[in-house]
Length: 243
Image (cartoon, rainbow, N blue to C red; front, side, top):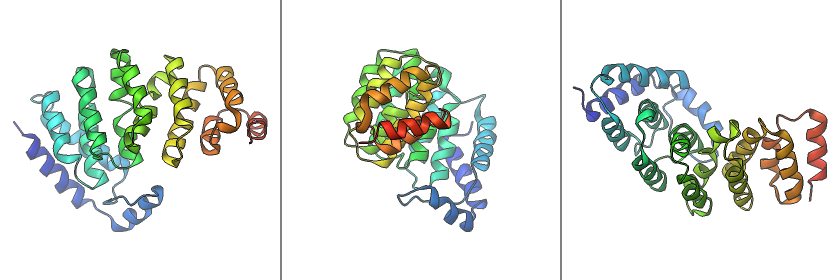
């Protein structure tokens, strides 16, 4: 059986073989913070993860997938984090409450130190757990006041699965309200994404929320939140909620 160390080495060998310095430079444009990138496409990362998973799926359990993340998530390169996350999420049917604390540790240690890494990991790990164990909702709501920006972003994006299905919207809007006071564009964008998803099943509730909080809604959050409204309604909300 291949060990997590073996798979990590295979992953890095394949990642480095596909490195494209020009694409790496282009990829940096998607991030305001400096991110280490080899220049692989999302499809290439998914292919590597799928191939490696096929090699271990008959032998591995969630334990080995978690150990792989412990090896690759601390790697500074985004592609290493992406492969580890994609393999880990293959085991999400087996996720139990201990995974919640594990993911929190990874975030708090800045293993996921860019928006893409957080957004790849959290919706389909923590989001799955919130559906399985609603008691965790109150815990993750507390993350909105974390001093760590990645934990804070996770407090929003982990609710995406629930929001787009119209579930636990009371908690979703409470999270959104708490995050409106955070002056961080990565949090503002995540919050806008969360609100946009919440609006998919209840546009009237989203509009009411935005009007109620008016000028306290960061403009970046507002622009993301109203993307699915008709153009006339978007313009109206942008004008009527201006401070």
